[in-house]
Image (cartoon, rainbow over all chains, first blue to last red; front, side, top):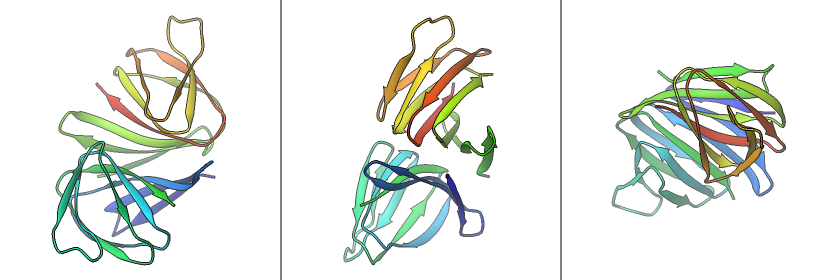
Length: 93
Length: 93
C-alpha cells in the first residue's frame, strides 16, 4: 500500500512505501519553516529544490540542494526552511 | 500548491509541483503493469526500486534502477512493469 500523508496544513505532502532496505517516503514541501520530529534515524535526500536545515545538536543552518542528502539522528527533531517547492526522499534506517 | 494524484485504482500515486525549470511530479508505483500516456516529453528518474519499460518505437523492454533515468517523447505512451514498490521523479520538459 502507498501511504499518502499531509502535514502542516497541506504544506507538506508525502507518500510512504517499502523497499527491501526498509521504509521510505517521498514528499514535497511548500515554501515555509517546519520542525520535523524523528523516531527512527533518517537519511533525507533532496530531489529537486533545496532544504536549509538546523540539525539536532548543531548551531549552524546548512543548505542541501537537489542530489544532496543529510542524516538525522533518531528520537530527535530538526528545523527546515524552504524557499521554493522542494521534493525529497526520506529513508528510515 | 502540491497536487496529489491517484491512478490505476490506487496503484500509482503522485505529487505534482513546480521548479524553476518547469513542472515535475514524484510518485510511487505498486507492483503491476501500466501504460502511461505523455503530453509533454518527459524525463523519468527512478529514485528507489526499478521500472522495466517498453518505450515508444522500441521493441525491447529495458530496466532502469534507482539513480537511473529515461526519456519519453511527447504525445506518446509507454508501458511499465513494476516488481517492487518503486518511487520516481518525472520532469515535464
